[in-house]
Length: 255
Picture: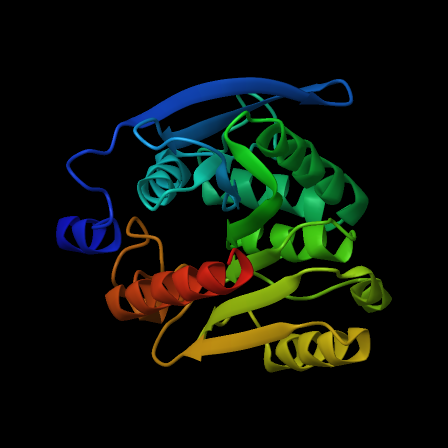
């Protein structure tokens, strides 16, 4: 894991000064708490990247990803979908919390947009160059953000669910879409993949779907263990390749 983190974050030079802070904000009456990271050694506005967490809420994992993105020269904000202090401890709790938002896509979009507003309002963020990335549950959420018609440059879904209760909402997509999936992910069915592809075609979206052979769910999560027979496991190659795919995607949309 250490080697992987060093490889993925190698753009953090000796002169980088990664500033981090916790930001409290609201969506309606709900208090939320996100995590901001940027390189204070850089001057001027820069692209912003919104990060949406996996099903256990905002954790050290997303915070580390925010710091890695800051090291690449972006303003990164890891938002909070669930609410301040709502951090599921077990898979059962996480499943119940995630289901609340998957069954209410309007609320999920509203929480994503609240986090997007925080990122847009940062002094160093170039509001015309913003993307969103998400992991697992967050991968679903960034696609929903795109389906909401958010005026951003692109979204990247890492091993996220691509299903939609309202596929006609694909016509609202304004940004580019990159979906990065494990080819052996038992949580993303062939039916859902086909439906996603059809939705993107019908919407005439600018989209790309990449599948990584041998990878299952949570392939970027170094905390997911290494036993793919469980359906969720870390895969170093897929993690590295998907991170590079994201970087290339950003190079295109932020030029």
